[in-house]
Structures are given as structure tokens and as C-alpha cells.
Image (cartoon, rainbow, N blue to C red):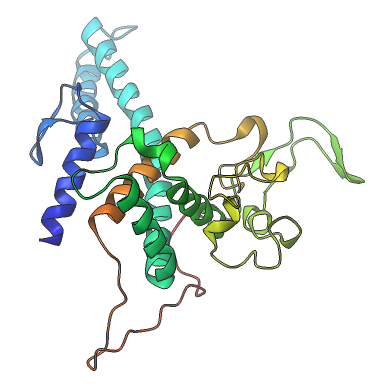
Amino acid sequence: MFKGLLNRVRVDLVRSYYPKRGLWSPIDTQHRPMGVADQASVRLCCGTLIDMMSMRTKWRSSLDYCSKYLLMVYSTYEDEAHRSSGGAETTATTLKWWALAMVAFPEVQRRAHAELDAVIGRDRLPTFADAPRLPYIHSVIKEVLRWRPTLPLGVPHAADEDDWYEGMFIPKGTVCIPNAWHCNHDRAIFGEDADNFRPERHLDERGELLSGPVETNQAGHVSFGFGRRICVGKELAANSLFISVARVLWAANFERARDENGRELPVDTETIVDVGLL
């Protein structure tokens, strides 16, 4: 029953995201986007044909029209696969930490359920149109991104010219590695409970979303990076996380596993695990 309910959520998610794309999936009689697996098949097929044509035309100075077209298709899906896989990994990892948080902090889950019941009810699934009326769901997502960043050491960048920062000389070409974990857990910014999972830190006294600290560019965390090199997919990631969290919480309740005597097993949120990037 639970699996069937989640499948219903999944299918409806696909329909909401991609109602007009002309690609069919066995799990959904509607339409869906081309997935990474499909793109891999396209690359394999195109690559094989290109190899065959290259052998046939190796004496020519350039490839014929058909070969050039296949090369264009191949490179297009190669780029799309790279973008899709990067976003899929980080979003999936964030959802894993969120699921752990729901089990470890049931009071947060109860408040999220209460908000969904009050705003959405039980007759329909949440939609993107409901987002402005679900501030606590947003605060939970912000807190997961702050509490357990997928890229704790961010993305390395190189200085394109000599620079100085707080009295320290940074030569051109220096690789700079941002410590996103420390920034997200800075007690000077987030208070003495910075290591705790507390979504309420992102809400005001009326329960509405607050603008984050200026040090986080008002996002409430630095998990998407900084400045001009900030993640270009952050809005897509935020929307994906919102609809996933809202719909799964609408449909399900997370509970701790129990031992043979029916007692809840403890949940460890501090042990380092090999989930995520870097």
C-alpha cells in the first residue's frame, strides 16, 4: 500500500513537471523527460554509428552531413547527462539527510504534517501553487541544506589574478576550497545551537520565513556556493526539494525501526557516512 501510494506521488510529480514532453515511460502512460539512462543509450548508439562512419570516411577531410548530425546529437545529450547527474546526486543526497532528520526529530515531522493538513487537507496532493502557504516546509528544507550540506567543502576554484584577503596574499592560480560546513555551522551567525537541527531558526515569531543572514546571501546557508560562481541550478534544486518533501510528508509518516520487544531503536545523526560528494 505504501509503495503504491509513493508510486502515485511519483507519477503525479512527473505529470506536474513535464506535461508536454513527447517521451514515453513504462511507469507512466503520460509523458516524461528523457532520463540519464535514455541519454546513455543515445550516446552509445550515436557513438557506435559515428565510429562506423569514421571508418568509412577516414580518407575524407571532414565527416559527411549524417556524421556531423550524429556528433551534434551525441554532444547535446553528453552535456545534458552531465548536468542531470550533478543535480540528481546532490538533490538525492539532501533528501536522504532529510529522511534521517524526520526519523530522528519526530517533533519536526509532526509540525510539518500539521501544516500540510491545515493548508492542503487530505483530498489532494500539494502543488507548487501551495508553496507560499507552506513556510514550515521551506524552513525544514533550508535547515537540512544548512545542517548537512551535500558538498561540505564546496567546489574548488582557482584565483584568476593575485589577490589579498584579510592580510593574506593569494597568488594567481591558487586553488581555493570553501569550507561550507564551517560556514553553515558558524556559531557567530547561527547561534550556540548551530550544530542542532532546528528549522524554527528560519522563521519569525509569526511563523513566516525570514531572510537568512547577510553572510549567507540571505539564503540561510551557503550550500549552493558563493558569488558569481553560485550553483546555477539552485532554483531547480529548491523546487525539486520542495515538491518532493511536501508530497512525501503528505503521503507518509516516518518512524524509527523497533527491536524484537517493540522498543524504538536509537538514531545516530553524527556518525560520518559515505553519502554525498567530497
